[in-house]
Image 1 (tube, rainbow over the protein chains, first blue to last red):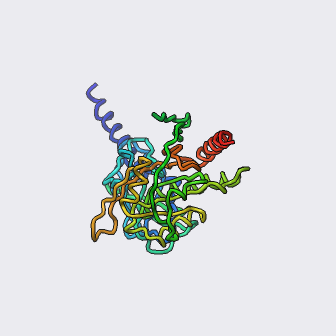
Image 2: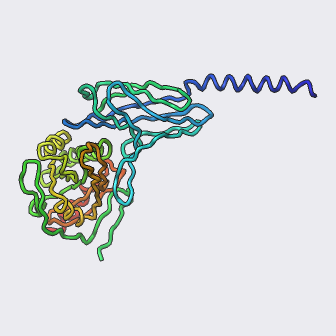
Length: 143
Length: 187
């Protein structure tokens, strides 16, 4: 009986290692878009569906873009009948769960675009997760 | 007491005994007076917000623009319907800026604003809470405002409200029924 243990431990380690490596690209994004801004407005909002395909929580800690001066993770909340935006310093996505960035909820606040952006253009945003994972995402500007 | 009825789609709340609005004075994006007379003879969709608002304001105005398209395409059309965006941030939203902003969504949209007391007058009558956390020297100060769309009838009475999550189809469909009912009452 005692001789089996090292084999079992080895098997568990091997499985754990396989899981860890496949988790490297374990966060995926679809339907990433930014609403075109009206003339004279230097503020835009980015939306997307984030999916954590791993068995661990993933924490989005920052977003950066070469196309904007500032990118912040925001959430629109309605409190006492008033809508306002709150800054989210980080967002946790549960294992094997999705998180929607959608109008009226979570969004990337994109401040001061560095070029004129019109519907049909694309902007690049890097999503940074705790642990060092950086996910580059192309957002489409839509009307 | 007027009773409010939340319709089954949970988007529109109807006031069967609509409250008449009283005198107020604001200024539109062409520097014309926008007052109680401006609400008479037309159905008015009112939304409070500000142009430095990346999420909820453009989202709501885009939905209202689609709702207006739907209404304009219907048999009765949108001749007696107006959409008014009321900025609660007059410090940044000048008439010129407001005009450019609302026209982006729909060229028929009206942008209006005023000083705090003037905005507060109309907002108070509709129960539209707002707060501007203005800090001198700060470019991006927070602004809090109602996420509700208010519907005022052609007799300048607060008749219904739409609460998020909004969608253009529900708004135009509900409005169509309400306008038919009210039209039948008037004759």
